[in-house]
Structure formats: C-alpha cells, structure tokens
Length: 162
Image 1 (cartoon, rainbow, N blue to C red):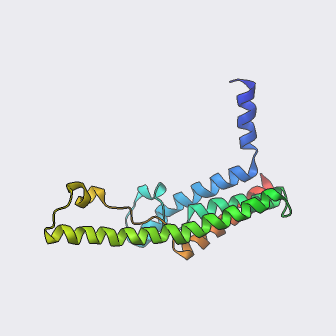
Image 2: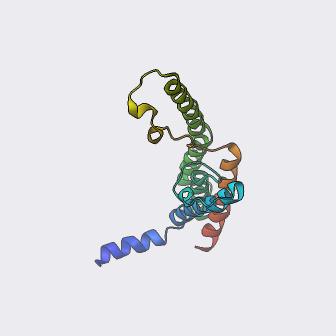
Image 3: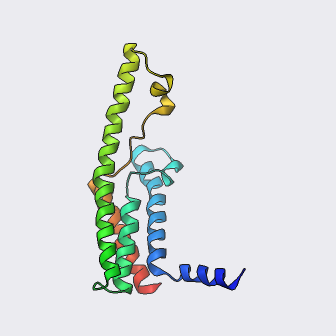
C-alpha cells in the first residue's frame, strides 16, 4: 500500500468526529433489531438497513459529530457552528418532513388499493404489492430524541478518549 493511501487511512481512523458519527450511526441501526423484536416479537434483520424507526440513526450520527467537534475544536469554532446548524436541519428533516412523507405514502397506498378494489383500471405496476410506496421514512419526535441522546453519549466518549 502506498504511503499516501496509508497516511490517508490513518488520518481517517484518527479523526474522532468522523469515527464518532460512523459509530453512532452503526450502533443506532443495529439497535433497531432488538427494539423491533421487543415491540413485535419477531426478528427482523432488515431493520439494520431500514430508514425510520427507533432510534434515529440520522440524529445519532449528527449529534455524535457535533458533540465530538465541541470537545475537539471547542464551541467557539466556526466548524462547530456549522455542525450545529447541520444537526438542526438533519434532525428537523428526520422528525418532520421525512415523517410526513411517510404518512403521505400510507394514504397513497390505501388510495391505490381502494381504486384497485373498485375495478377502475390503472397500470398494473401502480397497484401491485411490489410497487407500494415506502411508508416508514422518518421518525417520531421521541425516536429523534433517543437517537440524539445516543449520539451525544458516543460523541462525549470519542471527544474525550479517541
């Protein structure tokens, strides 16, 4: 491996904010599997890659990034300020806009099924089960808050000890 690539990879590994964000995202996504089991008594390993659900990996990732940056560069840094704004936008989007898009998908899927049952002709792909819109896109506010709490904890750990 060339020295430049090796230095690049070492630099990534030593980047505490990056490692905190990635760790928080992975932790939150993996945590969805046992939470799903506790709620529905069914193992669903697909939750590891699904969007939405408890906890929000989006919130966990940006909260970990921002918290670690606060520890590493300080709260007066422009980089930290940028991360705070980025975090606010991502968390608002995860708990608001994307959640509402999922709610719209539920209504559109119901409408498509009702139209199909009524006998009105639509293109076959518009009513088949495989073409349903994804309904779980965003998060409830508590899912965002739990994700953010996970991110803050991971961010503190990485900011202090990475």
